[in-house]
Amino acid sequence: MSKPTSQSTSQSTSQSTSQPMSRQGNENLALDGGAPVRTTPFPSVGNASGRTLGAEELAALTRVLASGQLNSTVGGETRRLEGEFADYYAIEHAVASSSGTAALHLAVGAIDPDPGDEIITTPISDAGTVLPMLMQNAVPVFADVDPRTGNLSVESVRACITERTRAIFAVHLFGSPAPVAALRELADAHGILLVEDCAQAYLTRCPDGRLAGTVGHIGCFSLQQSKHITAGDGGLCVTADAELARTMRLFADKGWPRDTDERTHLFLSTNYRMTELQAAVARAQLPKLAGVVADRRGGARRLTSALASLAGLAVPPHDGMSYWQYPLVVDPALAGGTCHDYGKALAAEGIPANGGYLNRPLYRTPVLAERRTYGQSGYPLQVPPARVEPRYDVGLCPEAERLIGERLLVISWNERYTDADVDDIAAAVRKVHRALTRSR
Ligand SMILES: Cc1ncc(COP(=O)(O)O)c(C=O)c1O
Image (cartoon, rainbow, N blue to C red):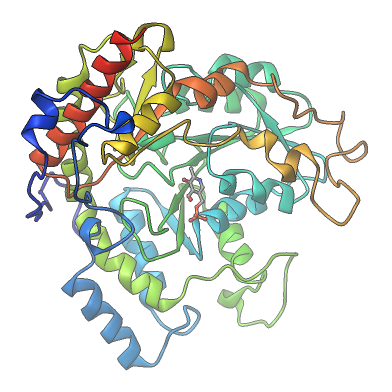
């Protein structure tokens, strides 16, 4: 099994299509009727242009189809993927599942909270981080984030811990390392578990050199379409703990202990099995991962050096980042506008960018804010089983709300971006910055 290397996967032939006049002469923003910096699409995770799916995946699928064994309880692909992923991460166990959300649900299942127990997490993530908590009748408690990265603030997490806290779920947002070493210390001090949501963070390096996903008790990954590697959907959990691994494996398979040959069900769970087809594609993707991350880092370094001097736009701070996306933090007082002003102006310039990442923090989505859970019950977000009725009001996490509301500018990122692609992005950001700071 190949280990992470810095081998490049870049095969892009896409050329710059920027229009020199629009960069140099005509400073009118495209939003105001000027010529856009870019008029042709960038490589995208939504189609073959920005994915590393090729002959290897096709051969793997053909192999599995020819075998006639598409189910992981019969075939060997999924078990082999688990072994290869564990080796890749130099950790004892990996457990496959049907999605990143399922992987996170496996982790909650292994923690096995009582109804009303609390799990601390971040308000800036995909809902897949939080929904499994509710599915297991745990109460999500939201800690605030670091305004520079959008990752959990250790101090805020500490302040959220109560006697009902069972776990901390940290997200490595956009592939930037969350402070998991400090969170692990905090978790250990309180006898609770740390789960790392690495859906956006393949091969992210923490400041102490460890790979994100190996610092907590469990690391969870996603193989959904937009991730560094993909099988369309799919999930993987890693852990050094044999007991957690076994519980997660059972949780993905109706609590059915296949290793004992008994047809019995040891606890309440469901079917989250990965198919052999997903596993075959994921196995073909894995050797390409290191190159994907290296190429994303290379492009990101180029953009960072082009943007580092712009007042009011803070470039991503971490060396170990794996750049699922390229985030900038906007200081509206210095940059002449909010992240939403930038997002709209950049989109008009032909750059795949958006302001805020989310429309609202996770606690303001209807499932939580309006307690749309089980029928009309509001369960488990009520007393009992909750210790106190959780409040998911506006103002709960001010730094997260500021990031989403005015500061977090997200540029879609891809391993297939050429230097010319990156230069177009840099030109567009500089153009918008010039226009917005001039009009202040
Ligand atoms: C941080 C994070 N957590 C969880 C998920 C859920 O993963 P999936 O879409 O594979 O269920 C995603 C991705 O969508 C994600 O980005």
